Amino acid sequence: MKIGELFCGPGGLGYAAIKKNNCKHAWAIDNDFDSCMTYAINVCDHKLRTDNKLPDSVLKKDVEKIDFKSLKKIDGLLFGFPCNDFSIVGEKKGIKGKYGGLYKYGVKCLEVHQPKWFLAENVSGINNKKDNSAFLKIINELENVGYNVNVHKYKFEEYGVPQKRHRFILVGFRKNLNITFQPPLETHPNNFISVEEALKDYHEYTKRKNASHIEITKHSENVKKRLAATKPGENAWNADIPKQYQLTGVKGAKLSQIYKKLKGNEPSYTITGSGGGGTHVYHWKENRALTNREKAILQTFPLNYQFYGNKESVRKQIGMAVPMKGADIIIRSIIKTLNKKTYKTSQKIPWSYNIELF
Image (cartoon, rainbow, N blue to C red; front, side):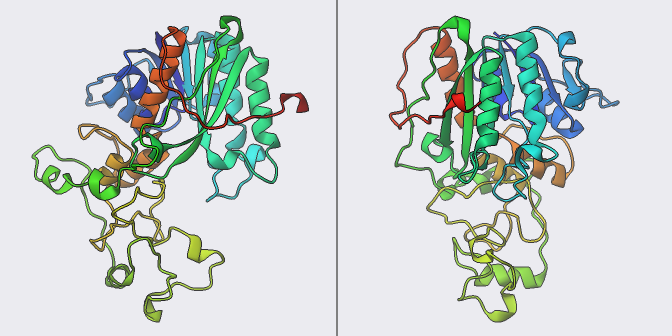
């Protein structure tokens, strides 16, 4: 089964499909060179060259400039289209933002290639409670190019990911296949994996000769003292923090993740690509930000996953990825559905929409 991927990033979806579920890599596209190289190294087993050349099947290119007819035919399409304009931590410009309309290139690719199935991913904020017309428009356009679309909000901590990461996953099968997809059963509906459990062997890992991405962020003495005064699960606006370490005057700050420590006995809050201004993810015991490798573990990347680029680039790649463990479970269910094999399905009430609005 040949797979193509738009907005491939470092390979969370691609690795799950190709390395975990025996799909075949056809092509992958992203506009970030470091992400493309990370993808090539891990998903395509690409060996770094002195000229840093990518393999021909991994394209560093703006999606707007792609001639989709020139790409190899595929059986499945993956596309986690950029979430910046839908994220609850962004400006929420939605479909009218710089990135909001990029989903159209996924639709265009489906129209041209008509693969048997697709998987599209985006943040939970795409279904805006006040106005979800943009989300409905996206679903409608996917339907109009020939697909039955299943929409489901996945809480990845319920699938064994040690992180509270909630995402909408759209799975579509070509209408003429007469296939209906059902989201897979939650593997960890109540017994979530905590960050403490997920990272219990981290310090042993750092002793390995081949340990990578373990550089610790340097903090000022003031930040160290602020973190020391902050309790697990709380941030720098907590009333118990001495005034000299508090950050004030920011609307909604008490609900933010700025200088927020993890709770060791719970899954992490959402890992993002942010880092400056107190937006790192902070250890529950040690007064420091998590390393990139620790974040990668919470995103369920294997320990041998090698990221290309400097520390900041790697941080962004990890934060933008789809958790591999969750992706593996969903893609495995897609393949079983295609092959008419049974699997345990989620009993949650299906997400519904009125497609006739358009």
